[in-house]
Image 1 (cartoon, helix red, strand yellow):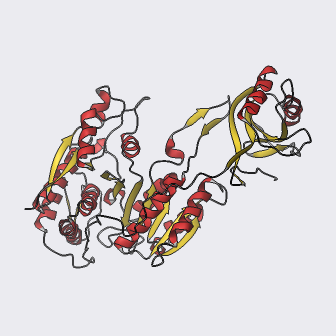
Image 2 (spheres, rainbow, N blue to C red):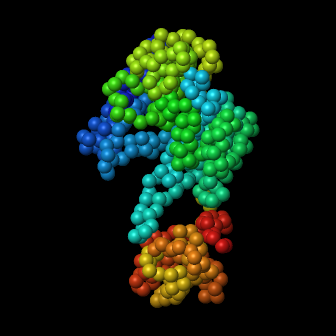
Image 3 (spheres, rainbow, N blue to C red):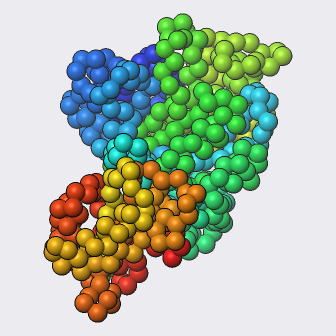
Length: 491
């Protein structure tokens, strides 16, 4: 027996203890060389006064083993409790969420019997950064943050995954026809990196039509790489298309630590009844075994599980075949154990190779480029004004951009919810109490000029002196001469 690899294990809440016990029993029977360290996370820790759901000593275990097999948890209702999953992903830099979505027809009923899709989702940023504010009586904001490091890391991981596992095509999905800067960056990075992988076919699709095609023609996709929110949605869509979300595994991969978990919840309504399906967690453990370079054990477990399904032995969430039967959690684990060493007859037997100790390309996941030449040319000032019109607001702001302090700006436009309402607005446009007012720097002759921070301070001081409620500013900058801001509707 080789040296055992330490792993951190959390049984979780609800059905978690039952499916984790079944999973670990199968791994032990398959001679997985692992040494579990058990930690408590989830509901008990939350209710014990830790709002993050994980204690300091548990963090120490994760940082030591660098491998986490996690059961589903329950987050208590009410405010103040953070998502443990998000906390772990961000704290440990688990930037890639990998979800294989495979159909197992005819053992599991599905309309898409040949489906075999992997969703590679960015895991740390996008709208899931969780930066939200209420800005006025009527307007709430959630910031969408897309970074070049985040894009480069997830896109390169998707290509490395495809090269290591054999898929021939990667599809990038974004909404860059609308969000030209944020989603546009993701698409641009994809195009930059794909040239390093000429052996892999690529395509880009807008996320809305891509999701529709995934739902109706999943067989046309191999690997999909996409930002966080889109990936969260389409990975659940894809898992459901296979016939059961309960079969879907996932891996959360970082440069230092990896977490493996089923995608379903803790299902407290059936906890303790011995009827839960351990398959999602078991297949997540298979991904873990590949990650820790125990590919032969991973294949042995996966093939035994496939043979179990072929023999019509399923848990109650799945409909058995005519000659099959429904098993409880422990009996299902017994059935998988009994088939260890056997190969499926209808399904194609799986083969795994150990995860590479290093990526197949020499490039790091992200290389910081030389800083661009940054030049500030204006500022967007967001104003809370409940009973104003665009023309009235423009009249006040045009004067205040120069008085009482010489700020050196010209009011260029006003928008409301992204629609330009001045100059040249339409009376039919509905406006809220939240206005974006764009000021561009000008010199005494009216020519464009570079803006200083002190100029913006003077401008804001002028607005405050006149009783205007500014709630936010965004500096308008050029990077190497290219505008780093959306030019706005009508420009």
